[in-house]
Length: 104
Image (cartoon, rainbow, N blue to C red; front, side):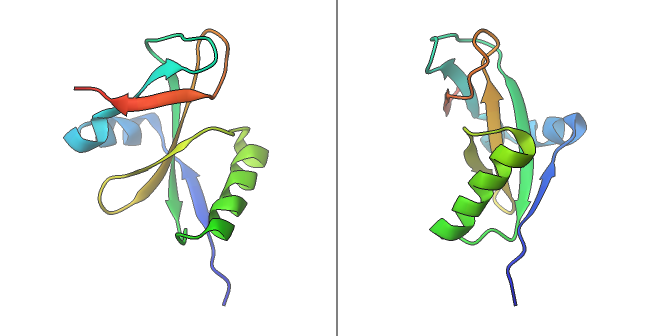
């Protein structure tokens, strides 16, 4: 039986609910690696189901994210139970090459 990977973009309301969790809110986009801009970044979050922790699944996911959503740079996130992909975009140069870090 084939493994099915399901991807669903979260709504603004779902993102707000995740942000209420302290551990989830601690990691934020902080700086553009291309132009050095800091501040507020546009973000998109996706819930990922059925992803195995191997290179082939992650490779397929990378291709799909680029083709379907135009996203090349992202990080994996978790709320302890579910897996997410988060991408951020620079408001200055529109790059997706963004540094995420702990914000305390």
